[in-house]
Image (cartoon, rainbow, N blue to C red; front, side):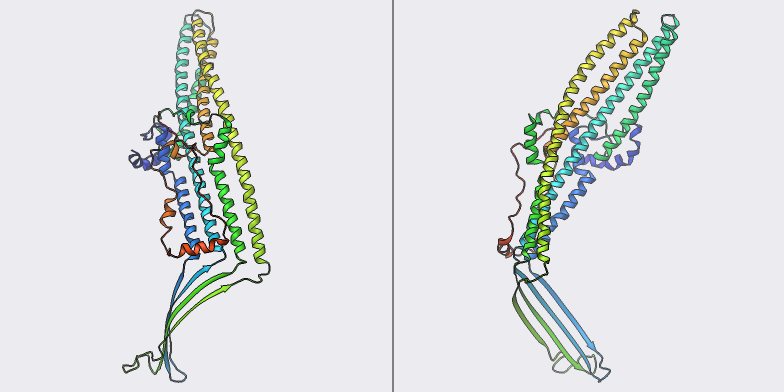
Length: 494
């Protein structure tokens, strides 16, 4: 079903400028459909995934420090011998191989830093995905809110038009004054202005929806309740955020990466061991012309072959304080990253607290607005009936009708605020992701790209052994984030 929607994506984007003119043919009718389509096609998320795949290559690049380097060279020379009448030619070719045996933990630390960088990027991708889904939810409920506000405004205009017609009829028979008619006319004009504003706001919300989802909205179904997926208390929300929030986990991995780079700097003080070997071929000849002789001996009578091999050990003795300075700088960067973890944690907990209290306030506001609408509807009906028997004025009816419409608009907005607050809370808890909200959609495997290149592009069978030897001086590698038992799938079915 989603593949068929993609066919209409280009047409929907091309008609982006026409969203204010009316409801075009739309495909995503539920919140789950909108999230799934954005998850698969949104350019911001697609760009972040491409950046993450590029970051995956840093592990391959770091691992090349454990792999051999093979170089080939060849040369051809010639001289014309204008001064002494002799001409000569020479050629050479060779292959050299260099294999690091031990780097004092430098390469292993670089690999650990690259792996931590990749994991930091994966958390960044989670954060972008969560932000995208939050934007989809906000755009979705905004469109539904503004569609309802437009309906209320249209009903208001219709009601006020009928009241104006009734006022004019009663004025004709002398039951009310010209002032009553003018009051009804003024309210009708104001309601038409509100209707125009509601149309404009709906067009704006539809444009925002099309930008984030990728197609124009149609008749959107009611958004599903998130009540069963929210924590029972704020302490549970805090615990979930500290375990799953992408920003906190990303800060922790960033600290591990900088800790590994401290080890990289310190490894510069340790010895390095490298094995190398080469095979070379060279030949020279001297003759009066560049045309090879046809007799015995051939063109290169001085043909030579050379084979060499060696193992070298290098130990820095004095660098003018460079290594010590690099170590101190790396340690301070690690200190800064360690402090960033606490800063991020506090910021996330603040967001959780704000979202929780916003949700509690929105729920209370929603309940109050529902009661207000119920009471305002009863009051309006009573005032209108009383006006028909002369117990109320036209202004009383208009005021009661206005209070009812204001209460209905407040209720629509309260529903939107309550749902968005729940989404923000889930985002801060690290739960606003497609794998929870839309389990049926094909999930993007963030580790697939790295796995595809782990044993390709230059991998050698002795690499694990050298890596183990080199890791003696390296810090432990970062572990992947652990899944918690609280990670229950979230359904968006109605």
